[in-house]
Each structure stands twice: as C-alpha cells, then as structure tokens.
Length: 64
Ligand code: SF4
Image (cartoon, rainbow, N blue to C red):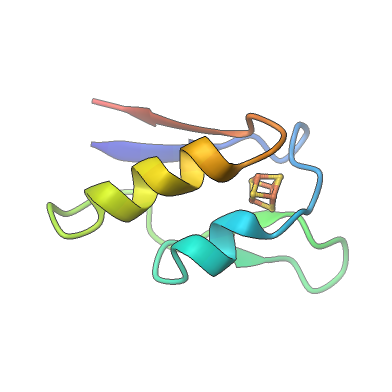
C-alpha cells in the first residue's frame, strides 16, 4: 500500500505529521505536507488510515 498527498489540496493543518510522524512532515516554508515515506509497511497502516481520516482537507489517500 502507498500513501499519496495532494499538496495543492493540503491546507497545512499538520494533523498528518502529528498523527503519523514517521510518514509525514510539514514544509518549513508553507506548512504543507511532505510525505517522508510513501510505501507503507504493515506497521504503518493503522497510523496512515488515521491520518487520512483526520486530515481536514481530504489531501491524503491510500492506494494499493
Ligand atoms: S493533515 Fe491534511 S491538510 Fe493538514 S498538513 Fe496533513 S495533508 Fe495537509
């Protein structure tokens, strides 16, 4: 499974980086999401789903 982030949709709320800091960071300049690792391990899946649910803009999705 992979996680995708649409930086055009992201509103820089930062919930993803708080929820799954292994997977996401925020850009120092505009605060928008940076995906640190898009290939999800079994260990990441729960946090990734939580981040998708908590993201207020719908910028995150999981495929695969
Ligand atoms: S939670 Fe959503 S809107 Fe907020 S920084 Fe992450 S991707 Fe962007």
